[in-house]
Length: 218
Image (cartoon, rainbow, N blue to C red; front, side):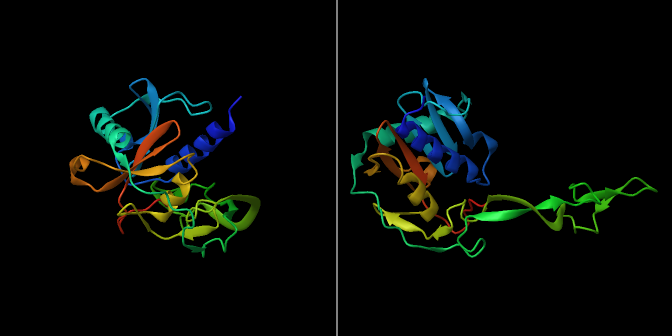
């Protein structure tokens, strides 16, 4: 049976994996690194010192050497203040703060594919009934997490932690890790990309500096 701490860690892992970045596939997912799990999505990487109950099955980590450098710097750096608690946020306009969006029934004309096949020549074209969305305009009665606020109902603005500006969504998500503290690295940035290191109870990690071009929307 998972401990409350492991359940919290799993919630953070799920949030990281669902926050999709336009990065090579090898950076995203749960991996095995030097006998312990790590999770990354191209913007955040977490490293543990032990197995965590309930994590998805993981494969050997790609880009091993880069991840090892991140892990070493996070473990060896000195603590640099505290993690912010009261983060500025606003109600999500997309879901009006509900954290959910209604799911529509599949288009009956294209079967939810968004495309139709010409009965004469066999070529595919955008479904004119649903304009290629695959959805009808009729609610299914089911809901899914809002893709903008990730089900939180709040949108967090970028925040500066230990001198590095990071995405407010990640600042909130990582703030759930037990005992998290920012860490000042004693080594130059990996690949020249600015990032913030941190430690928490049982592990450590890094989060990339916020850039206007970053997106964690689904």
